[in-house]
Amino acid sequence: MYNILIVKYGEIGVKGKNRYVFENKLIKNIKNMLKPMGKLNVYKEYGRIYVDLEDYDYEEVIEEVKKVFGIVGVCPGVRAEKDYQKLKELALAMLEEKIEEGAKSFKVESRRGDKSFELTSQEMSLDIGGYLVSQVKDRIKVDVRNPEIKIKCELRENHVMVYSDTVAGYGGLPLGTNGRAMSLLSGGIDSPVASWMIAKRGMEIEAIHFHSYPFTSEKSQEKVRDLTKIIAKYCGRVRLHKVNILEIQKAIGLGCKEEETTIISRRFMMQIAQRVAEKRYCDALVTGESIGQVASQTIQGLTCTNASVSIPVFRPLIAMDKTEIIEIAQKIGTFETSILPEEDCCSVFSPKKPVTKPRLERIEKSESALDIEKLIQDAIDNIEVEDIEF
Ligand code: ATP
Ligand code: MG
Figure 1: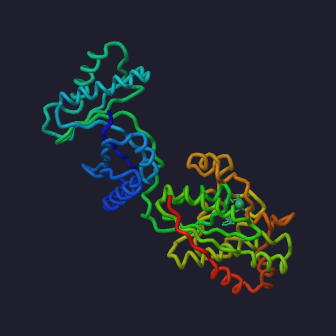
Figure 2: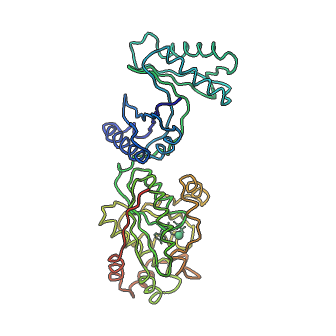
């Protein structure tokens, strides 16, 4: 029955003069998201965004559209030539379907885009509501205060439309409206979630992954590629920078105290990420760190990591519990891949007893035994880059 989707967007509606920029970006992003399905018509009309469904399955199209950041909800609807009687019939058909699905109470909400129409929107609701009740009798009752479902009826300049359900989107802001970030992506649960959350705020994402091949396997890199692919589902295309830090880890192992190796390698990662970020015009780094989650994420650990770079570091998970993070990982589809048992470069070289309260001066002193600049430059010179699309 549905032939159109009505796309609802929240936050961007209040952006004043920038509104059209955001809307156009949103339309472009929806079109891109739908491109693999075929050529669907996505357009703006009367300050709303619509998608014509034609012969496509509405649930499949909604599944795609709702992944576009900036959308708060998607409503499947029926639209027809402007004809008030037709509007009533469409409303009845929709109500019949809802009754079949088990709805027990309803109300009609109306909007009148065509101000010359003889009924006000309130009168329309009364009139259509009366008509519906006369048709369905007591199979469903009217409840204007707390209805189970709403039958939303619209009369516009040149069409009528009915819709009821809203499928929730993720909200946020359209991708590409807030610059670009370089996300430190491990194979774990947290960093893919962090990347997604930052992308949701409109930032394009590039990913950087550190490995210790051949100590870490080919497969563990594949896992990161798979995770990047899932993120690319939401972001279109993600460039993945793969950095081999084996030589760095060896140098740290030889030159520094065992308990400091994790924190020092983390500082190397951050510095390399910063340089790649600058080269790629990224405005910030993203990590999946969360206060106190592991030894390197105590407040002292975070202080040492943070001090290694000058670029802003975004840590969207900083105050979240693991269970909350897992919930998002499941919702966005990264969890199953994240929990596959592949080793990480950190776990291969991790000390038995890492420092939990590292002091920055001490860490810096330990590091000074290393040729930091050469180690970083060598690693950067050997970066492999892949553009990953869903
Ligand atoms: P995750 O689940 O994201 O791996 P974690 O809880 O295992 O996080 P750590 O291993 O301490 O925590 O890593 C903290 C953050 O540092 C990660 O969220 C990620 O942003 C970054 N990071 C760690 N290891 C790597 C890596 N091999 N490549 C890229 N980034 C990494
Ligand atoms: Mg990890």
